[in-house]
Length: 375
Image (cartoon, rainbow, N blue to C red; front, side, top):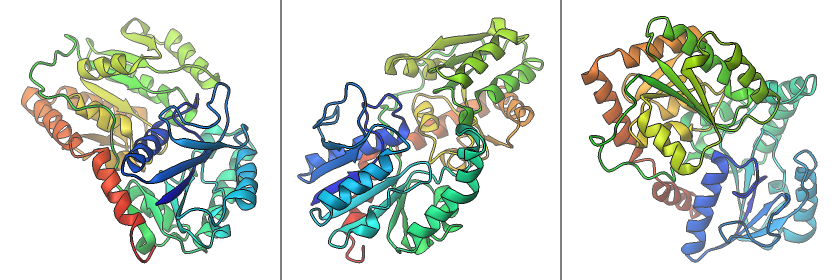
């Protein structure tokens, strides 16, 4: 098959995240299987004009996140429509490219990791945030739904969210997530920190609600005086500065270590040594960091939101709590003070489940959808 994948970022983009990992892994597998794949994506300083970092063919159009979708649409209509067997449009931020309605020859698919409607309220300045949340995302999703195209997503939560805006469940197909971190072979040799330790990992953005995690840590520490916290990830941007300032003012700052951005190996080491990872995003497609941590023998305590309620099985592979620091602290303490046998049971279950969340399965699921005769 000759496939065009339309997406905002590739793996080399400075803001690449979990969605780009999925795109990269699936694109590489498609290419190795003999399919021709091209990404229509954005440009950025230092980008290779013809290839992604993994060697996938690429067409780069525009560099500004706000104007790139329109530039990509114009380029597609003028130069690309009618030349591919499959066109897959990845929707990020809830705003489609709307290339699919202009394509008539190819099989067409919309790919949503998450609807990302509520993210507008956290990541975009007012009043534009309200415009995106109340008008742009609902209207754009309903408009694309009128095309009655097959939709690909990665979780039941996102499928349900899309259904609220016209994407019928019958045409929405779920593929497995995957992780690029290899699960440890055995939990027994892993050495945790002597003191109970929770991990916060990821770029500090308002939608990640990192400060909620620190507040929960402060509450939990009153009940677990020897508790400590490790925080890793980029602190660039205004929210990152706010997080660092909050840590500096915290009465528990001597037990909070900000380790900064980490390499993949440093991230893995932190996951192996910490006792739990905290994830408090306002919404996720799945929550790759949860499964990555599970693969290294560390269960998660997460907020009850789309995506995270899919990547954690409550009280089986981790703990799901209401969306407030007090509840998160309760979940944290409950997990860490549950007793060794209960903690080890949950840790084992999370680790075993992580072995099933593979890109091999994700690719198998994707190909079954792309090859459907009714697509």
